[in-house]
Image (tube, rainbow, N blue to C red; front, top):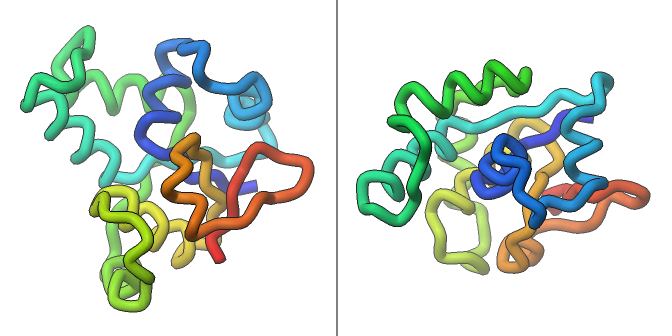
Length: 135
């Protein structure tokens, strides 16, 4: 399965945060699955860090890529087709970062790893997994 990690899921995963369910943690580690972190999440992390809303143990420009590589999580670039998807996305969620992640999941046929209830308006549960699939 190809999984797009929401920003908070990535941060919880790399820090061992107890808010990340064991099922989700196991699924991200599962060698048969491919986990992705969008550059949108990297951007969001840097913005929140600069605003003082997200403390990190090292500067985000080095910390995030190092952790992504350490945990074998692939980078997902933003492409024009994913951005164009925003025009068709209903305005159920106001967060521009999350809306872009939904569009990337749609465009690249990825399931989404998120604990954000507001994003569930765009998704359905994938039976037997902790993942969400965009509608």
